[in-house]
Length: 142
Image (tube, rainbow, N blue to C red; front, top):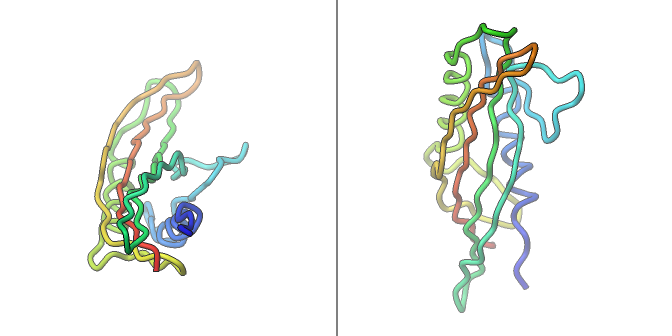
């Protein structure tokens, strides 16, 4: 019976990114759900998708894991440079070779960037810069 790898993958993402992504020497917070008093910039976990890629002898999954890097500035101010710095660090950590993931029940065989989208949103008081990243992983059950 195949197991679901997404929970272990999310825990591994948190362990890899938390306190390892910094801006001016300060850690960038990593959130599953951003609290009301959340700080900016931050990394937030988003959606996952899983497609069964099993063979007759091996349970395998094709998993996507999405996250957003979000920065906020007062209205009509801001720059993408802090956001781009953080995204560069995230990509280096997640795509490191050898694959940096340690999961108890799975082997992560590959990690690639599946998509990277930049967008800007404005409210009455803030300008938000958001980079949405989606990573694709081939994961094999041990």
